[in-house]
Image (cartoon, rainbow over all chains, first blue to last red; front, side):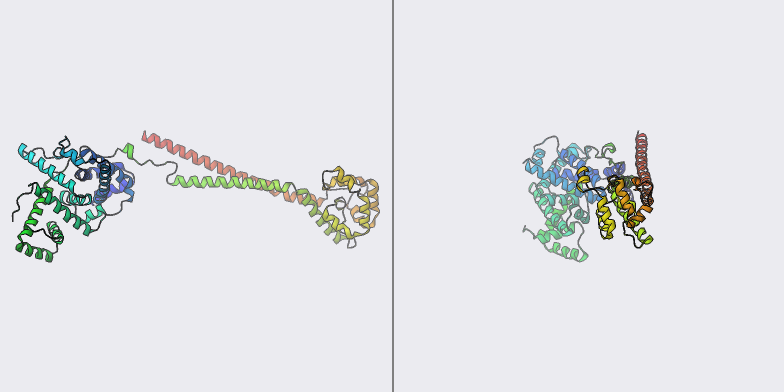
Length: 195
Length: 280
């Protein structure tokens, strides 16, 4: 945690909303990204991200030393689990909506819009396939894989964010990678292995 | 390609993230050299990881910053910081003072009712003591007041006096008359005085045992036997003298507490007004 982060956290603990908003600006991309990858739906992801920051502000006095990002992602992950459980209860799948080709496809969410059209289409398909593959993973494995390979968190931070041991993180990550590899390989989306 | 064990999967996964020790990494490199399926597996995992790492970051559809007007913590002005403790102390002081005041009033009300009975008993005891000192022969009943007070205590005192007791028994009217006329036992000395006729008073005066009693009273007029010896008045004055001081002290405390609470309230109101003014 940087010095600026510490100051913002301290000020936010004292009730300074503007200081907390600095933290929001710093982490909203990661929080929304995690939620989007977990849920596959931009509206739900936005709701989860907003709820995460509101919950974090309310609970920031309980935050002690450690990684603020991991603490924030823990709130976001739990919020995602809640949404996924609710979606299961409603027996609706966000993946079904996404694969049905609605306007909320993942390609619309990405920043790089300057690629050539054919490359852009390939990327969209690949991204949609990756998102579909992520949706096939168990929730705990999905969260670990997103945090590690997409968002680049260290094992320790992931363990803190998921409230698990380091060994559990390694194990979940290994299984998630193997499953997603199988999924992409079965759709011939993985580049040919070269050594 | 034969499926690899879970242990090898974890080893490969850790190797992707550079989490193996030097010894483990060297061991894995050797295995990869000699096991093409393991090497292919590792290459696929590395490719997949590269795909995930190359995914463009997702752009949030909007900002998630919080609106200070909505999410700023609402602090209770009335119950924050030092004001809370000042309020608690002020209210406690007020309650304590009001409680003391009420308790004093109740105590005074309780002591006012039996005052005459207590005073008569005390005066009888004091005066009998004085009589003993002045005349060792004289019986305990030695004052006009004692003669006029047939309280149970005095009746006991009068028993061993012999002639005086006889005179008193003659002086007293039959019990049926005053008790029938009155509403209860004769506790008022003035009633007793009225019940003694001048002849009875003279008879009492003729008795040598009652001489000290007569000497202490106005012998010129047996009808006006003094019922209020000076000792009793002094005692009453001594008893009632501290009461106004205590009362005024209690009132002072009460007013002080009220002023304290009002002052605190005024300070809060002013602080709140300044706060609102500042926000506006």
